[in-house]
Length: 167
Image 1: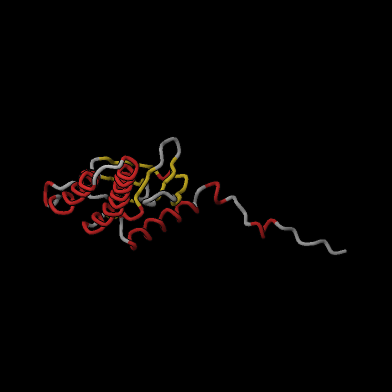
Image 2: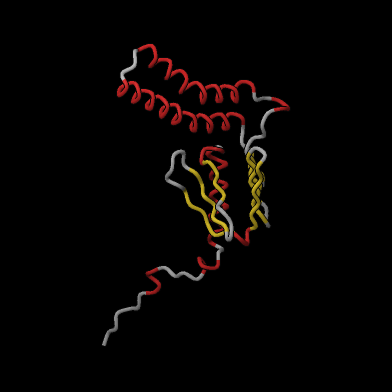
């Protein structure tokens, strides 16, 4: 199964990443202006420079990165033997034998952390794929997690309780 990021989803994911950077830049410039006492003109200059770099990078990706020369979008391949995650030129491959489970992170923007044995986890941006694609991915990871050896041997607490002894 192949899950490919659409162009719209790519722009949405990049927007979610750029907005906090722009906000932090504006907050930093505001704090500098508040404590250093520059004139109003230099404050706007600081805001323009601090917010211009991330905004211009986002605009470049939104408007000009199209066609044959565009950076490849995020792609995820799931088959019976391995998980292959490609983002730009970086490809990470994990055998299902090395799969240790997954978690959703609390960081912003949220990510899916796929744990694997003996290597760093694979981090997938939560908004990199559409809602339907995310549900397919999470369902496949959940299905694989239920088959893990440590999960199969766990018994629910209600099974472990012994009935009360009646004399």
